[in-house]
Length: 258
Image (cartoon, rainbow, N blue to C red; front, side, top):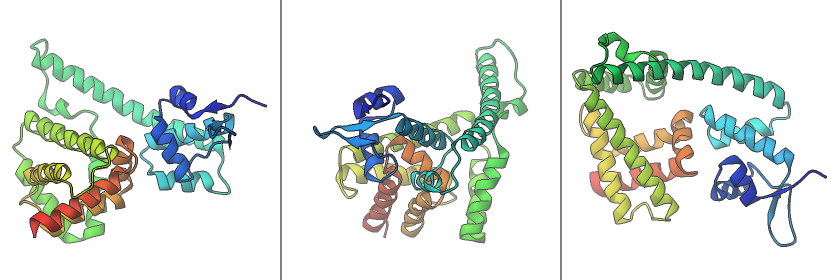
């Protein structure tokens, strides 16, 4: 019989928190090989390989429910999945190498070591991915979405790199704070979460043609649950965050924006 590991040992091996492993067990994504008489979850090699597959799929932005469906499929082939994942990660690695070159060149330019062509500022960013997101929004929400996208682009066309970095930093700060609120068990209608949603609303308003209405703000939260890349992004911060954020936005919209 191969060695079995406790949940704490699996957490140390994989870097996945004990809380997340418990969550995976609760939703049926990663069950232990057995539960000992002392109540400890015990994991064997098969479970470790399954956890590796989960983590590879998370890296590729799959939401948890999609990962569960893939791994449960009767024809699931681990070797074939690993080969596909290697190809996808190699493609992403090439893009990140290009992004790193862009970053290094920008740093050198800002520090006065070299001069950088403005066109090279955007090397490695994916216009295809942006176009994919815009097409999904238009298909899902119709021409109104196309109009809003055009309006946002017009509003942001003269923004500096500093403006864009500030917007990104604020968005990430709100997401991390919401992750902590979820872990602390704060209700979505608590004062602390409402304050975070006020920041979220102001953050969205900075890039939208006009501040989102109650319907639009709640709808944006619902979108996070519909689009797998958004869901994966928030689930990677804290399991359950996508649903928590969507519910918090809906609650704030009903209480503060109507």
